[in-house]
Length: 197
Image (tube, rainbow, N blue to C red; front, top):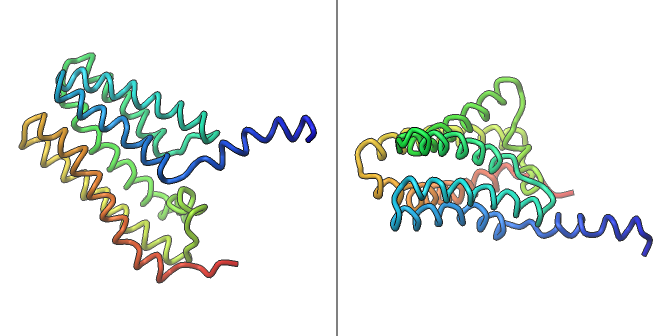
């Protein structure tokens, strides 16, 4: 094996290690830590731990896969901003509205992409799924609507329940809802899937 082949081999192996289980662990790990820390130390310590865990998850993703996915990176930036405001101003409102801002941002990006004939969902999921142009557009509309629904739901919940209940809802409510919604798109994706070459 040549030196050039040896130099490129580790990067190739890192690329091959990315799979749904790893992505799920990197996404859920910081949230579960956020929930556990809040239960013991309160929202401000939980926010600080959440910020640290998000950074560690990004670094781990970079080391294991050789890249950082766009959506987790955007989420991490917003966690840093709203988490920082929460800690600096000692106001838990900022960390509570963070999911609202993220969901509205994702919906705006998806719909804005359609407005300029860009399907950003395809850029994120195109390596995993092969859909027709109509399929990608329909999926974009559905996810945009779902993100808006989640933003409205988060606003309704954090304004009407205690902080501890909101944390539980964030971890054990929003995530299952997202998983269920994603599973419900199987029919659309099957109907508009492109035959593999």
